[in-house]
Figure 1 (tube, one colour):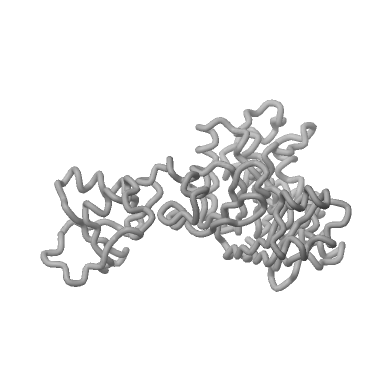
Figure 2 (figure 1 turned 60 degrees about the horizontal axis):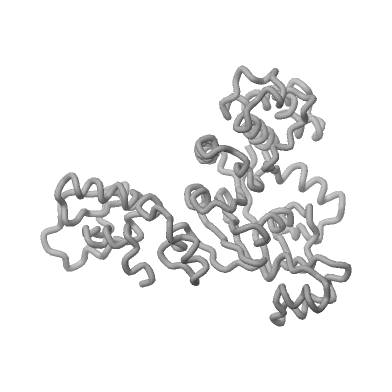
Length: 346
């Protein structure tokens, strides 16, 4: 299995129009999207994007329609050519790759899962899952063996001879995921992959992805407009508006410390109890008298902590590392404040 590799996006700009390079400096100097459109008839897609994606992590890019998130993900494998900037992967700038190197990079380093599934209707599930390996020239026996392993892993064993039209939307997306994983590319690009699915199926597919990620440790860039989805699966989240990153960080960073009113409005209806972890709101144990006996893990949710405290009539809990070391204290009042959002701006 291919080792994961990280992605570094540096000072990335995208301007759509007949002469985009002529307007980069004006955009760098502060020209707005509306001004660029009104004065020059060009459209600003991305402005000065800087994102580091650690190897083996899930980076969510989220925003409303028109924010630039799908434009951004298509720059990583250069389906869209940038106007300026760099995308560095394994010490190589993808933006500067010549055509042959770019083809090899797309074939061996990246795989993509689309919102519309993009399955070949005249091919079976097995042939769809094996398609990328066929393009690479892998022998039939080997590609079918590899594809079948991933078909089983995504829960489609017994459907390998079926055609896409015979499958539900969720099953078709499982085929798309199996196809991407069969390629064994270290980078997985998922563009609104679950947006077309019903809520229950969507949640199920999120679970499938998270379970598989424990095994495969891909570097995943996941595009979504759904905040709950972003908070559930993202190790880190970058929130876009009008082609700009307005905040990036962990789910807890964004919920606890929104960068501005726009982000605050985005997160105001989040189930904070499920998103926030005990470690984010615990306090120092130094100087505390009569440390409580009851303990909880730092990565437990605030909702779980409150449930345990309510059941036991506890006013505080010890917060411990997996090896039993004392990390902090979680007072009941801190847990309630975190859950309700009281003092969120602090």
